[in-house]
Image: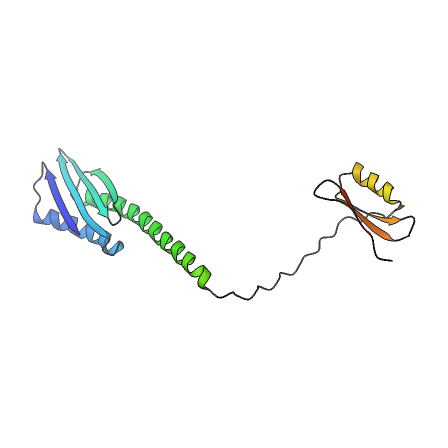
Amino acid sequence: MRLELTGRHVEITPELRKLVEKRLAKLDRLLAGGIVSVQAVLTLEKYRHTSEFTVHARGDRFLHALEHTNAWESSVTAAVGKIEQQLTRVKGKWQERKRRAASARLAPAEPAAPAPEPKALRVRRAPRYPVKPMTVDEAALALDSGDDAFLVFRNAATDAIGVMYRRKDGQLGLIEPER
């Protein structure tokens, strides 16, 4: 990591340089050497100590933080904290991209896993209603006039149970048992 430290209205003493390098070492550990360079500008205006950092990370990623306090240590620490939050977000995006790429590469190469066991089906009981004897035409009229999707009826001609249902194309379907 290359550090370019500039002082405006302040002399960069070895102690101040050491403070900045110490705080930036945490960022370098966080990104595992992914920081290319850092430009730090320390400005003193009366009692305001301003720390401005621009970090150039790999992949042409630039992170910026500016902090004003009344002491160098708190100013530098707060600015580096802001950069740390940005780096955490960027690092998460990089890791997520790697995970997506790895899963896309591995998906076709994996052997077909055995089919998962089907879940136990849950039966939900509908309200009971009487099965009335009626003809197929009467069942069609009853289903057409109601809001139900199907109608169970006893065929008056054959005395067998039949199901009349509304198809997706709007027509009516009939299910009858074999004789």
